[in-house]
Image (cartoon, rainbow, N blue to C red; front, side, top):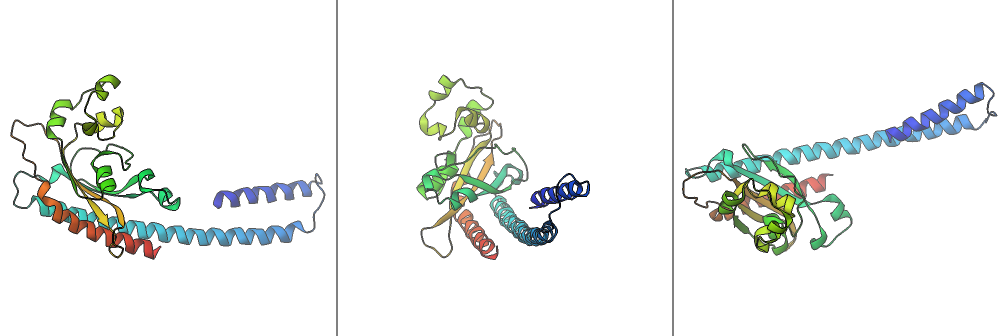
Length: 254
């Protein structure tokens, strides 16, 4: 709207200058029309700014609430468990992208957008575009159930490996998890295990809002790896319920 207003002011200013220099004929009705249209532009711009500001405030509040819930989840997981370290854990919330919701695309065609990532340590995010066919996140979404994936041995074997397309295709399909070669290379050495649970709508039975994941970073060690997240489903599901209520509350307030 502000770009449009700037263009409008430019057009009016140039036209007035041309009239003043006699380069274009005077248009008596131009001035009242210009004033009326300018007031409309100003009013719409201000109303739009208020709506956008309210939306941004609601998103910021939602982000803080979800981050608090994810942080509490991870703190609860490491209590009394020497095998788990807080800085090696991460938690994420994925929901359907706004565009896919608006277009009412089927579950198979939808993309899952990460709306919150809480990680006190490493690794950095992978930048993967998640779909119902991609990774543990996609499997949880498409199968509508809790999924636990262990990839420590896979990471130990392939971390830092650069695959040719032929080498990549020789890897078992279920191991590739729907990733492209580039995506697989970027993620294969990062995680030892991942737990994904559905985020269910609190009032509508069977409606899934997204996916909550807990992941454990891969760490090179000679110690025997012991999976620890498989028994965390109840804690993750409880946090997913908190996240769901916040998501619904945020949507209702916009």
